[in-house]
Length: 474
Image 1 (cartoon, rainbow, N blue to C red):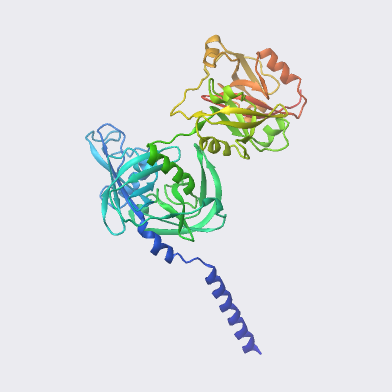
Image 2: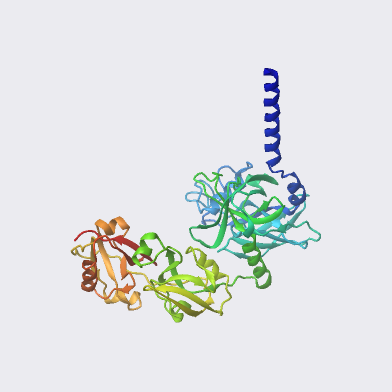
């Protein structure tokens, strides 16, 4: 009987191990079929004497190029090297490595814009050891996508997939050149989709736990079908190396950018001319909303398409051109993907009601100027109910705000300080009302019931944002 139990146990264990093994993905076929379409990109930049440079005391060892990419990517000067403070001032060549992949048989290559930024020479190396000098057809820094061209024919190419049908938890794999080690494959799963990152408003990143390191930038992210679903672009790291958080640009976003670069050499995007922020639970409560769906308009640029179309600070955009806006990060992508000049319906919530505005989009400018408020230290003033000591703006300060009224924050204590209001901020509005005067503002604050949450529209530096503050006792 005992022997039978052992035999049954061994059988069940073998069956379990076998079943588990069958569920694990096999990437061998993917590498065999798609590996040849992945390329190594070597970038050379001539750094002139006195300019901040990259390179390092590790010159001549294999990691030097990868370290160069890392320091250049994050703008960190390396002391003791030419071009760095205290170093020799002669010209020298800086080299860095990245990855890319071929998207057409006639030699078009996709990579990251930061890989080829300010390059004097770009060399693309194939898996068969052939090397070609590459030309930059165009690069878009906002999405970090660049299109290169090499003079070759009958090249292997990747097959683009559909990142919209990717599932969180699905297996994916990356092929690239981490630390210069060519054609390295790493694998993991999709950790999240549609991830918004700071200063990256135009890309709904695919987050993975695939091991990505310096040199992987610009390489492809594959699904198990062998289709490219993204371009490996960024990592979250406190050390410069992999820490389990990697981010890829969805391939549909990248291909749209590549097509524009190929056709016109540049990327055009729709433009509203507004500053937005996420609608928190506290802000939604202050505006009398039942949920946090939508993008809160924190500021409208003077003369912009948004101003001409009737958008105002305090509006909550819940639909743009028929597309539902759930998170604030949904709006920049929807606007950018719309052709400049098109008139689109924009549904907003304003003062408890809903209305639809027709806005003719402009073309996103390369740079913009916004009004800024002075933050000189003024004399003391009495704090109001929420802990704010305020002062009327001078005529000169108002001119910087295009004639608008505002109240300069001299000091913040109590509820205001806890909410994050700082000295030097300028209060522009309370909920959906513009600030008219210091007396009127303090009177409004004094008349609010305890426990109510209000939203202050604040100008900080060049940005406007709503700050929720809960009213305490009188």
